[in-house]
Length: 119
Image 1: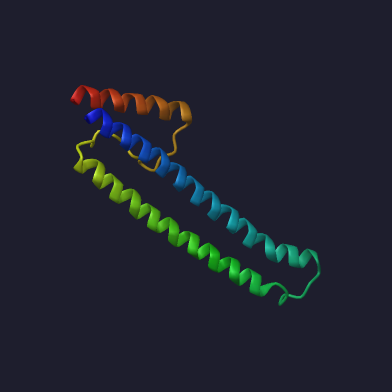
Image 2: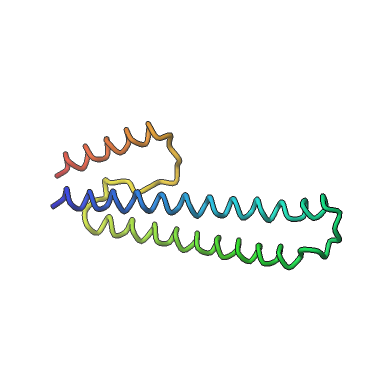
């Protein structure tokens, strides 16, 4: 039973981390687009009023993405609470530090060994 819970938690964590990375990537790309729009306008030698509505709309989209990220962080916190409620406190669901893949895999292995030992 602990093994099933741990497997489910690991799958949820993997999907959560992928979603967090995707939203961060989307925010970065949107910010890059917004930052480039005035440069493109200037390079095309267009008036400052040209494209202002597009910049404003893109900024609203960026704000929505940032709000989605805030909500995703809250989801992460609720999942951590759930993890604790089902007795998997030793299973890390992300500490905010970005580990290189090899170190992350080794860390995951150590966590699984700790959980197995505790069971």
